[in-house]
Length: 173
Image (tube, rainbow, N blue to C red; front, side):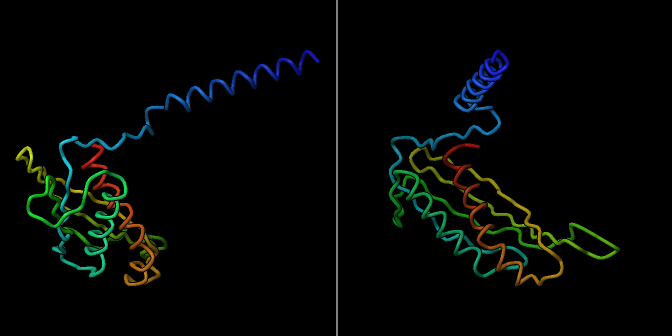
């Protein structure tokens, strides 16, 4: 029985330590809340354009739609198409190209789709402008065509790029 008590207290101590870490966060994966000036009430998300050398015709419209949806669903801002919006977001796909990312047996085994979006954020209440880029690389097997890779990767591309733009604007990370 004395051994069982030691195991019990060890597990209890370990549980308390784990709860403390989960409660306080470990610092690496701590997420910030959305941080919006309370005076900002409206946002206008202009259509994201395609300016990359290679154009995926679905990418820009889907990015625009998902960004609008995310802002409306996760903030208290009202979407507007008026020119008097407090925040205005414009952007374009600046890079969309494929490179080699892996070679096996002297042949390309993995290809990489590189996507970059340039965003301009206008804060009309403060009369400020901020520009930034978000980019991601998406790997796929070189045994499939680019069209097949796009069919598989487009939902992930849209989700990741939308999250990064949103987080940069509203969470500052």
